[in-house]
Every structure is written in structure tokens, then in C-alpha cells.
Image (tube, rainbow, N blue to C red):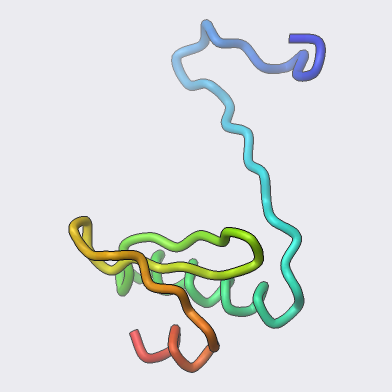
Length: 75
């Protein structure tokens, strides 16, 4: 609690803590586009890991590593 004095685990709606990966400008653009596609319900989820962008299009599908903006635009 010393690190997050405003955080309370007893509230009905706990505050969330997010950690964002520091991406290159190009990978940040890829991630932003993937998150937009997620919001538009074209993909199920998107995340980055070790500087790489991954997307999943269905709950049972395998994650796909994206290598370009064009790949994400095609969804």
C-alpha cells in the first residue's frame, strides 16, 4: 500500500494498473492499429511481448505475430 496509496482492495470497483511496453515508433503504430481493430471487433485481442505485436482473432485460435502494419490492416 506504500507504493499505491490511492489503491484500495476493499472497493467494489478496484482501480486497474497498466504497464505499457516501450515500443519503437513503428511497432507503436502497429499496436495502436491492432487496438483499433479490437475496438471495431475485427480481432479478439492484441498485445505486445518483447517488442513484438501479437493478435488473436478467436478464443480458440492461435496467437499470430504481426510483422507489418499491412498485415494488421488486412483484418
